Image 1: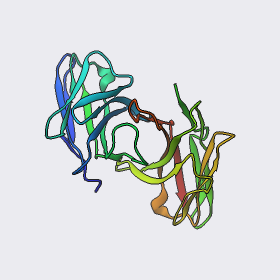
Image 2: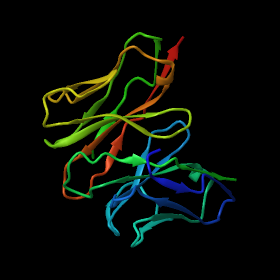
Image 3: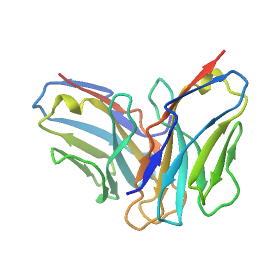
Length: 116
Length: 116
């Protein structure tokens, strides 16, 4: 158990809908990262938050947005969903945010999103 | 942008034997970190080993060791005395040491099969 929690574990929704994925980082971790893993693909970095502020942005679609709250949990909002958005969405956390030591990322169990 | 390449989509190894998974990366940075993550069928991402670029000594974690060749930008993972539980997808990841976020870049993964 990495200490990172994600809810829900599974989500099935229809095209055009909007969903919110939630992530709670490990205790003490200030950074949260979101990744998308499509079927049989590697992980695509979406976005990073550090202590409530956006720190780095990857290949995140405009239909997607995220935020990190004062209690450090994070939410990833996916809107106008398309079939191609079906994927496993991982949240990871790390202690540091920028210039830091070997702050490896600890991954949550993921949320499997199915868009029908 | 940094790229991480895993040229072996699939590998197999006999139980108790040794296998090496390859990874190369492209970067202009001098300070960075490299990681190997394991993703078993449960899809949980598990950190296997990490290497700091400034360290010449190769990292070792029990049966797992790396061969880090900085000049060649190569970072291979050696698994000794392979066990059935080692069967998983293995991802190589790169993280730069920079004051603009510590985004990870992942390779496309190598699927390892362990033959009893």
